[in-house]
Image 1 (cartoon, one colour):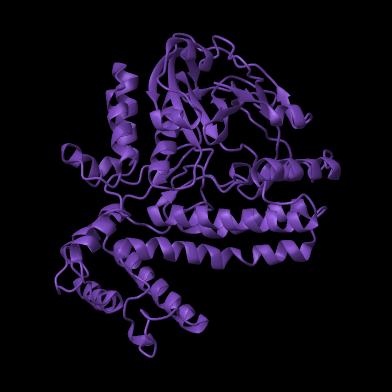
Image 2 (cartoon, rainbow, N blue to C red):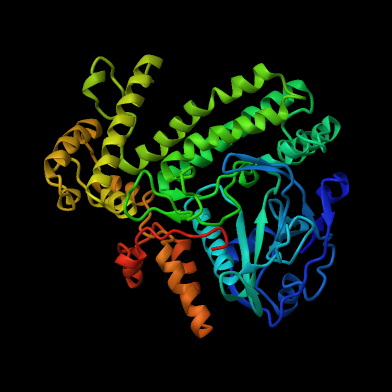
Length: 502
């Protein structure tokens, strides 16, 4: 790896230098060729294993933990920071630089009496979900590898330590700006320094003046809305949307008690510590805006309040636009389809007027909302139900979706409205292939990850992990030999919830 050290060299006082502690008997549990290509690596080797397990120093690495604060479950914590993640620097790849971090590399000044280690189960889950989300085209950090060991660590019981090697375009998060605005460490000079650095590094098309600051925050609002729209469309629950877990680039990261929906449930909670459901699946869009407002408060010393409010006011419309774009693709609700409410316009001949577009958006949101209500009331699997659209012929009165329904009358009413919206499909095979290209057959179901983890814990066998990783690289493809991985979970695997150290 070739490193540059822009954060380390330009932002003294924004981190603590700390060296990772080695883990004993390191061994590759998983490796991502796709992530490796991002930083110009080829195959794993013994020397790299020793470097990434902290047994050897990596040439050119600086090793540091960033400091930040954040709102956790709505309450402000003035000093957090990387408690179990140590950054080596920015690895130079063929298309840009990626931070390389050892998650589970040992204690830092921000570990708060913790050991700074990651247990194997959490390291494996982060490795799998990072690469699974990337294959689903969800903005996300990546995972180069997961490294196992025989080093014992204690949580509720004795477990073994592991390291996830995380790649991120940036580790800068909302909490960084909160830290340098609020409390005793509040420092407008450092706040401006951090904003200028972030713009130069990651928003190079913008200037570092008032106009650039204004546009910068607007783009953060937009990218955050886009990320959360992606989460809702694929049924992903993050589980712990604290402001210190929100990327300034709108990438998903800091995975803990995440889950993909099995049976659709708007109020699904995947974090066993979330007793009030603050971060339930259906609450994520609102929490995204709440977190952006906390970031806006931190930026008030250097950005006009009116400009911050104007940007925040675009969040909902961007979220809806992105969600509609994704879900229209999943259900085949093409813009040029017929709609009785808009018969006065020839949709295929010209763009809709603003008023007609707003009416169409309202109609489609209602149609999508009624569909998710059907999924919840009939206790249907979210991913498998959407995949059914790849078998659907909207011109036929019968749908295989109907066979799954208990409330058949309710479905029939919805399906008639859906058929009216879709209209005539000239090339049904092409239409079905298009649905299958955006509705995955395979997702990272919690019970599948758990089975892979148990095999490693009990038998030292990572073959299920590797099999699952390869499956999730091609989530939209038919993989007949892996058909069982697409089935609904067994009863024990339905709606599993996890801890923050999961």
